[in-house]
Length: 189
Image (cartoon, rainbow, N blue to C red; front, side, top):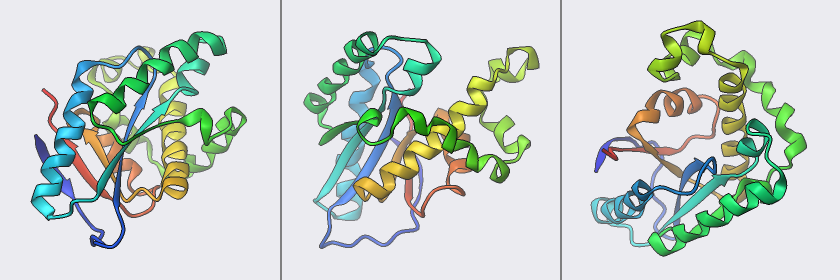
């Protein structure tokens, strides 16, 4: 299941290792999310650490902004993500609980640290085929997600991330903006 990993941090056996998985609550959760708790069990076995926690970082702010949803409409979708606890996630954390919506513009501070060519690599193929399809939502969405992850690292002492292999370029680019962390790429095909 693990396609590859980048592990820079030493494992401190006295502290639980906290891995985060970031997902935005655009629609109700999909079945593929059940793979991530299985990956954590694989990591436990591979590195010999029993106390590894998996936190789902559910962004319920960005989809509300992008899709112009009312709070109640987004809340209905967000509540569906509590089912991740039944799948084996140890904690479900909603971005609205630790990042204020008015912080959205603060995420622009990272704009000088990401080059256009790096950003281009993380775009899906459909967006690369025609610049007419590229909107500021993609650019701001990247910066927002990095901002949210930075806040989550600080608040929840996250030491690593699980990520789908399709988001490889996002996470490799984001690594230079985030605190040092272990990164596990998961093949969810």
